[in-house]
Length: 233
Image 1 (cartoon, rainbow, N blue to C red):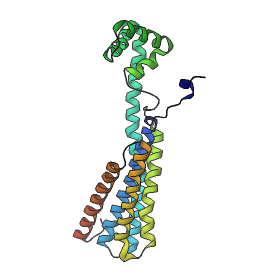
Image 2 (cartoon, helix red, strand yellow):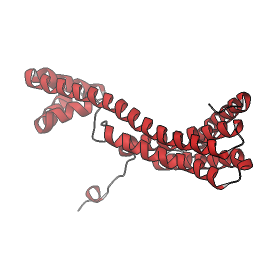
Image 3 (cartoon, one colour):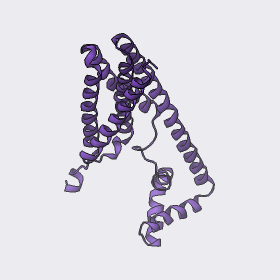
Image 4 (cartoon, rainbow, N blue to C red):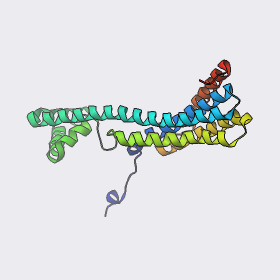
């Protein structure tokens, strides 16, 4: 057995669908719930309204994330399916044009015309639609939209992220709610940014700083609004 057959490369692009939804869901869960708790705590000295607001934010946010992801990714899926159906029809009615179109793509990538036509012929003989989906439409099994997966991932990760600032609020004294939630949330956001970067194969510093900065800004603005108006909104 050759080294080529025994060597298996592991690429990270197959993680892009669920990773995007997971990072977005967890980040939004932490930031939105923590900001809501901090804003209400800044306006109210009573822990009861703070907990109710946090729990309501968790439930509403999880449902909103699931619905939003499902609708958004379903729209993407509908567009992809329409393009695939159109491509299938074009292959059935004008195969020679599609052959030349595929060859032109390969010429644009650096092959000479004769070789490009041979490659197009061989790929179309095996799986014409698959070849055009991949090379003309840019679709693959790794990047195809999956609405249900995106919705469930976003809802679950939002809930997981939102549960932490809510739990901190429940466990610590009322006077320490704002400081405790902010500190715990920033730590979690830093871990989330680093973890997302690690799983996605990117550098750690920039993604971590990005989530920390924007999370901190969101909580600061919400706390300012709560302090300014002095009322639960």
